[in-house]
Amino acid sequence: MSKENGLIYRISGPVVTAVGISPRMYEVVRVGDEGLMGEVIELHGDQSVIQVYEETSGVKPGEPVIRTGQTLSVQLGPGLLTQIYDGIQRPLPKLEKSMGVFITRGVDADGLDLERKWDFEPKVSVGDSVDSGQVIGIVQETETIEHRVMIPPSIKGIVKKIESGSFNIKETICELEDGTEISMMQEWPVRHPRPFSQKYAPDVPLITGQRILDFLFPLAKGGTAGIPGPFGSGKTVTQQQLAKWSDAEIVVYIGCGERGNEMTEVLDEFPHLIDPNTNKPLMNRTVMIANTSNMPVAAREASVYTGVTIAEYFRDMGYNVALMADSTSRWAEAMREISSRLEEMPGEEGYPAYLSSRLAEFYERAGRVRTLAGDDGSVSVIGAVSPPGGDISEPVSQGTLRIVKVFWGLDAGLARQRHFPAISWLSSYSLYPQSLDQWYRDNIAQDFPDLRTEISTLLQVEAELQEIVQLVGSDALPIDQQLTLEVARMIREFFLQQNAFHDVDTFSDLKLQYEMAKAILTFQAEAKKAIAGGALLEDVVNIPARTDLMRGRFEKGYQEKINQMISEMSKQISESLEVN
Image (cartoon, rainbow, N blue to C red):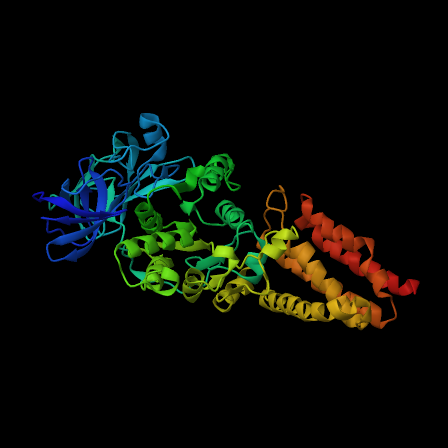
C-alpha cells in the first residue's frame, strides 16, 4: 500500500489531530519526526484523530504523519512464553539491554525473536488436507509447554511440502498446493476476537486450591470474575495465588496501570515462583504485560487487548488459559483521559458513555470453546478493580458487576483483622454453582452442593446473630445459637482462612475441601446430640480432638489423617456426655 504523508494540525496530550491523510479507522500511523506509534480513532472530513502510544512532549504542529496500512496487531508464535512486554508488545528485557531502563521514544521492537531457531516437528504429511486452525506441527517452547503451530484462520488447502528441522519463525515450514506459504508466526489485529467453532456452557470448574473460592464462590473454566477491593486488601496476592495454583496450563498476567513498585514486586516474584505441578519455574507457562502508571496512558488501553489476544492464541491450541487483568480501573481511567481530550460528552463521574460496552467487549472474549481444529480450549478472565476508597458503587465496579458472573469482594475490615484471603462471604457471589453442581456430584461427592448450602446458611445465620451479640452479649443467647456461633467461627478460622505463604495450607485439593466441610458439619451434628443429652457446651467445644483437627491443616499428609481425626472428635464428644 502506498504510504501517504500528512501533517500534525493539533496536539492535546496523547491525542493528535492530523490533516492530509485519509487512513482507515484503527490504522496504525507514525507521528512526528521521531515516528511515534499511534492509532487512528476518529475521522472528521479531512482530519484524522490519532491516539499516540508514547509520550508526545516536544512534538510540534507541522511535523509529518505517515500511514502504515496496518492495524494494531500482535506477533504470535514460539517465544511468547517467559516474555515481559509493554502495552504494545515490545519486549522490555530486550529494550533494557539496548537502551537502559528508560525506553527511547519512537523505538520499534519485534514482539518475538525473529532470528532464534526452533526445532519444528510436523504432525501432517504431504498430500494431507488441512483446515483453518489445524495443528500442523509442534515446537517444544519451554520445558513444560509444547507450542502447537497452527494453520492461520481463513486458510485451508492440501499440503504440498512440509519439513522438520530447525527454523526461525519467519521461514516457511509448510507450503500448500495453491502456493500459500506458512511460517511459525502469525499476526493478529488485537481488537478482533480470534474465531472458534462453538462456545460451550460453563460446566467445568477452574480449580484454584483456595477454599473460599472453590467451595463457596466457584469460577467455571472460560468464566469471568471481578475482584474489587480497596488498597491493601490483597488483590495482587489473590491473583498471584490463582496464577500459581489454578488448573490452567497458561497464565497471561496484565499489569495495567499499576503503581511501579507493585509491578516491580510482581516482576521480581513471578520468576522465582515454582510451578507446583512440574517443579519448574512458573514463568515457563506465563506471559506478562507490564504497563505501569507512569507509562503513556494510551498504551494502557492497548495492553488489555494485547493480553487477551495472546490468551486466545493459546486457547486455539487447546490450552486452558487464565488471564489476570490488574487492574481494569486503571484501564478505564485511561479511557476517561482520552475521552476528555477528544472533548466527548462525559458520562457518570467523567467516564465516557461507552465505558460499559468496552468492559463487556473485553470480558466477552472469555469462554470455553471448541476450537477451529476441534479441540477444547478456554480463556478465564479475572479482572481486579481498584475503586477509589473501596467504594464499589462507582461506575467501573458497577459496569464490571453487570458483566461478570463471579464477584469476589475484598473487605478492608477482614484484612485489618488479618483474615486472609480477605474475601467477604456476605457480599461475594457466584452465578456458576447450578451449572457446575453436576460436575461436583460426578467427580467429588453426591452431597457436595448440599454441604455448600449448609455452610453458606450457617455464615448468614452467624451474621444475624452477631448483631444481637453486640447488644446483649453471647451468654444471653440460647445454647443452640451459642453452638451455631462456635460452628461459624470454626468455618471462618479453620476453613475460610488460608495462609498463602504456608507450604501446606497454600493449596487445598477439592476432595480435602469437601472433607474439611464435612468435619465442621459432623462436629455440629455430634455437639447438638451431646448437648441435647445434657453435655455442657464448654466441654464439647474444648475437646482436644477439635483443636487437633483445626491445627492439622498445616501439616503434611493431612488429607490421609482427616477421617481418623473426625472419628476421634466424635468419640471425644460422646465421652464429654458421659462425664456429665
